[in-house]
Image 1 (cartoon, rainbow, N blue to C red):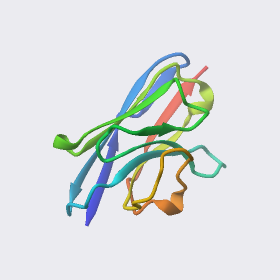
Image 2 (tube, rainbow, N blue to C red):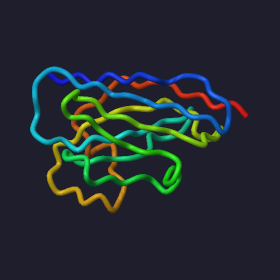
Image 3 (cartoon, helix red, strand yellow):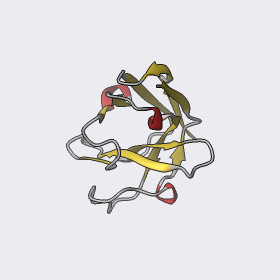
Image 4 (cartoon, rainbow, N blue to C red):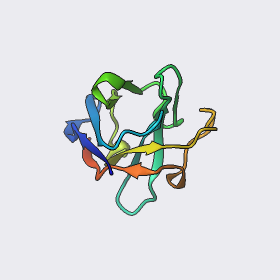
Length: 128
């Protein structure tokens, strides 16, 4: 069993920053691609960013590119999402997820069906 636990969410003013963390524990799985998704009230879950096992390759959604940065520390089994220049439209529950897919090329967004494990989410609220 793999557990993903997100932390770092909260309330921030527009223009501010937050850093989300995702700690993985449980059964070791081989070289997963890690990703962040988000879901705003009344909307579908959407891809935010992904990072390769090595951390050398990343891909961000157009809506967050240049503002959000994904990174990982495999020694700590932790993935991060640094969110800067936050906007009210970034308000959502943010989910960490892991994919065992081995052919992802980091040029298009991942879909929820590509992911094998999910955390329970952390709420980010950006006030205007």
